Length: 246
Image (cartoon, rainbow, N blue to C red; front, side, top):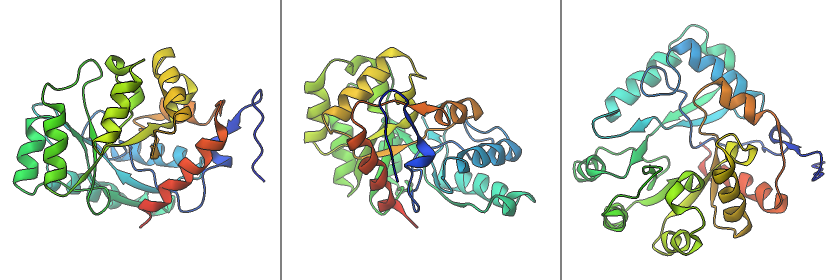
């Protein structure tokens, strides 16, 4: 039985269901600012399995001039991981996609059919924490024009949106889905993102969740108790990730 006590908090492992898929993480080795090596990947996955997470859609950053991870490079990193001699021991299912920055590179990738969705026609996208691209809504339209649905990663982390519920709702109205970073609820990113995550949760603007795990400091935070004011919203939100089962 799932029991929530506001004062004592809740362990994620107690509410993450069978079939849950982590749709946002950086577990692939040597490809961005996540796991640096296959051994780091395996340690990260092992830690996440303690939270009842054993299915992953890996989403390395894809940013123009920083981490230009085309599908071939991402797949090579995935193969390096699954070919690691210790990989069979962690009994894990992994697919690979990307977390696409809303920039010109994404427009080029869309035009050249070089994007890999997390499922069917769903793309995980992000933007700078400090300012939206000037052509934000044009980029969103382009994504949709190519037949994809954008899922905006961690909207609670965009400082320029904090306190601007009108803009959050506008993003939803034009067709963006929202993905909550579960770690934001712990206060790991600071007071602003924590408050924004609680406000967005209360407004029921989130669609899915993810860990956004880069390293074991993240998993350590996730393995602690999380106190949320709207626990009755969080549980079905976590359950919604089973949509991405494979």
